[in-house]
Length: 393
Image 1 (cartoon, rainbow, N blue to C red):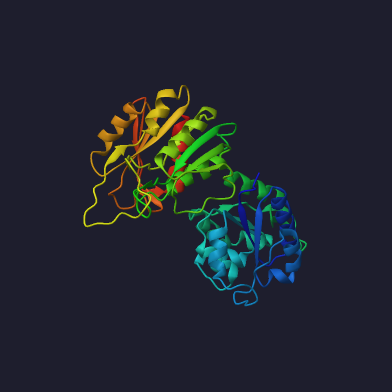
Image 2: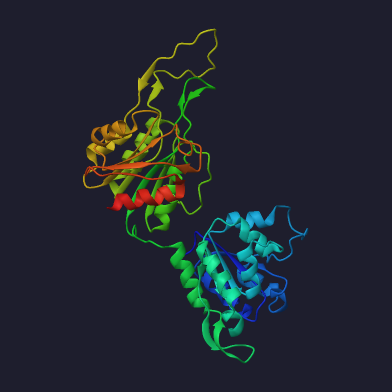
C-alpha cells in the first residue's frame, strides 16, 4: 500500500518510545521506507539499534556525526520524506517546534520539511493539561500540523488520565489516510505524455522547446497515488522519473510519440496530453553536420497527436494543454473544439510562476460542458490533483 512512500519518524524522549518501534514495524509491513531520527533523550529509553533493525536503515541522532558519507543530513532527510511522524511528541519537543527552536537533528529537520507532519503527544496528565502545552499544540495545528491526540489511561508515573500516546495502529492509519487521501482512480488506466520532443536537423543539431516534463510527471505520480495504472510516454525531461512509475515509453521525436500514444490509448480510460511535441520537423534530416554561412531549413508539419486521439477516443476522456503567450482563453476554446477534447488546461507561459521550467503553474481549466475555472499559482503537484479531480467530473 505504501510501497512508493518514505516516512520520517521522529522519536523524542518519553517512555512511549517503545510503542514507536511498533509504528516502524507497521509502516514496513505496508511497504514504506522508514528513516528514524531520535533525540538524545530518546536513546536513553530505547536503543537506536532496535530502530535500525526494524527499519533496516541507520538511525540519525547526532547532528555532527562524521562516520557516514558527507551530506547536509537534515536537509536530505527532509527532502526525502513524503510524511513526517513525531511520536512520542513530548511537552519539550512540542514547545520547541511551536517556537521554531532548532537545537538538535529532529527540530532542525522539522524546520526544513515541506511534507505533511503528524504529531502524537505523550506526557503526564498535568503536563498535557498545562495551558502552555495546549497553546503550543493549537499553534502547531494552526500551521497545518496534524495532531493524533493523546488518549486516557494509566500512565507510567502511576497517574490516570489523558496523556498516553495514541496507539501505533491509529497513528499509522492517520499516516495512510494522509498519504492516500483519495483512491478514486482505482481500476482506471491513465496515459500521460510528458516533456519535449526533438527533431533532428543534422548530425549535431535539433529543434526542441523548453518543456521540462515536470507537469506531466507530477500528473503521472498523482494518478498512481490515487490508484491508477499509468502509462507514461516520455519525451525529453529534466526531472527524475520515480521508480514506481513502472510503465514508461521513452520517445524522442513527435512521430515516435504519435506512434506510442496511438498504440496505447485504446487500453486507457483517460488520456492526458501534457507533453509539448514539436509542431514541425525538417523535411530531410542530414546525417552529417551542416556547414556554411547560411543554412535553409524546409520544415513540414508533424501529426497532431491530440487531434488524432480526439477523432478515435470514443468514451475515453481526453485532456489537452494549451500553453500560450497571448489570447490564452480564445486559443484554449479553439483547442477544445478542434481536438474534440473533454478538457483543456490553459496557461500563459509569460506569467511569473507559470510555464515550462518552474515548479509552479497558474492554470485555467475549460471543459466541454462550457464551464471555465481559473486557479491561483500552485505547486505543479497541486495542479496535478486539480486536473485529475476535474477529469473525473
